[in-house]
Length: 273
Length: 218
Image (cartoon, rainbow over all chains, first blue to last red; front, side, top):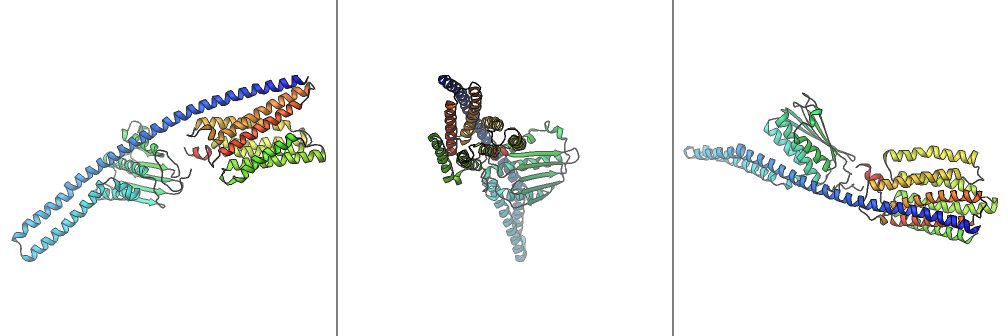
């Protein structure tokens, strides 16, 4: 009888081992397939991210060049023309008046040099990376206020920390696009921009008191808003838009600063996950 | 004391010592696994003492099966997040409740707690399959043989299915009054393979969280 028990134990265990082995082999096969697919998806995502980053860089430069050309035309050329006129008039003036005119011209040229220096800084794309998001937005808000088109308020809550160069660049581009929309399409008089830094979350909010639109119409809106949303997704952020007709628009971009994005290489020191 | 038991106990001791020596480099679930190995060793040895003193080692099984279930549940709950984690943890209440009822009223302290062990093995089987599913959902760029979670799932899947086979065969052999000797040898082989798979899981672990924390925010 002992042989019977042995056969029973032996064959049933062989059968079980066989089934388990089939399962494990099938799992390994499936997992490897998934790994390859996952790797391809990551590569595609990286390539899309690089393209988007390049696009964002180009758009920022394009906007900066437009600003520079406007500044040269409206500000620096005017100042230099005035200086030229001042100096042309000095021939007929007394010694005292002449020295006054020269002094005035000297101040105007110094102002033009200062403006040109600022412009050369803004022409350099690296300034966003060097100055960081807070400073770059602050400069942009100053520009908006100087233009007089709209009143812009800027608030920073919490202690700012770097979110990685690439993320900050994309965030700045989203900010620029949102502000452009408010200025060009919404007819806003007031802009509120806030940056909120905490250990758990980063929030960039751009709020205007413009014409607004129905949230349902988001899909119908131009590619600008969709573009902002897809860019936010690429850097691991969530972009929400709240708007209603006559009630302005509020765009909120939220990021978990600890979240590591393979393609958006976060430099935050606590990014250990 | 049978030689095969001594070899078995020494084998668990070696794995436990390996875990204890490298304890710091393991992530929390694997630290719990090392604790489980230590407690299993104590339970196996105290079972032998109880056989000598009371001629019955069953109280040790009643206690260790509940501890094992609790620790394995905590181990797996740290790999999962969201609803799966909640289900795992909430399920502990009825399962441990059943273990207490079983020990008090159904299979008392001097009987082998097959009801609870079979229920726990069924739960482990589900844990292992859910673990495999989770791995397929969130694959990582690392060879499978270097992924400790894969070895842990394989160990649990292997052990729980083999234990079902063991109890099935035990019932059959008992009902036909056959000799259970070969079956107990078979159970030792299952145990050796199970602990060997756990050892591989421990050697592959390098303080990593694969799914729980990593995918929580994604």
